[in-house]
Image 1: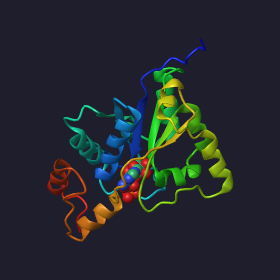
Image 2 (image 1 turned 30 degrees about the vertical axis):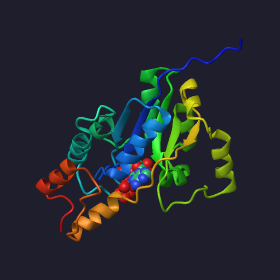
Image 3 (image 1 turned 60 degrees about the vertical axis):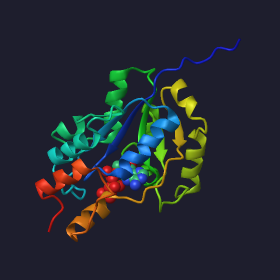
Image 4 (image 1 turned 180 degrees about the horizontal axis):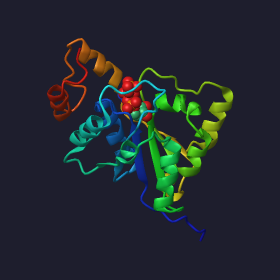
Length: 220
Ligand code: ATP
């Protein structure tokens, strides 16, 4: 009998600015959890480096909105380490730390949307990401299906797996393009709608909307 690789539970992280968190984040990753068999998704709100456009909500408000969005949903938890640091951290550095904490053999995945996959080659030490984790990519409407250059597309295809079960048999190194539902929602659009006094009812959870109202966020 051939030796089968041992299967471990795949741990998954989902990073974002979450300014604010919305259904375009939550619904695709919930579907992804079903598709891939994830039991836990850890949301990782990030610090934004000073040279980049700053979020409108502060770190504490973004964290609170994430907490309200996932309250009572056992699929999700939140890791606030990036927000609590004094200085911004790169995703690859956080993943390196998590890899150390969880050990070399633990299958670990980082979830991104299709737009992030398209710009991944601009991330700090992007090629090292796959040495730390797998990448799970949620579909997002309005973004190209293929990467910018033939070289990047080759990189993608060299790492792509079609069977999500393979993700639990290796600790890192694979890319899975998921068949998640397409939601045309973005935080930019929500902020814009708020500034214009437009309704955002179906775009984000009620509790997050109430908090945004109470804090007077994205107004004026
Ligand atoms: P902004 O409009 O401010 O750029 P955003 O809505 O893209 O924000 P982020 O917090 O920057 O939200 O996104 C975090 C992650 O969620 C990214 O990997 C992004 O690709 C993914 N994502 C955001 N919105 C969607 C969506 N509607 N469908 C699929 N993935 C999404």
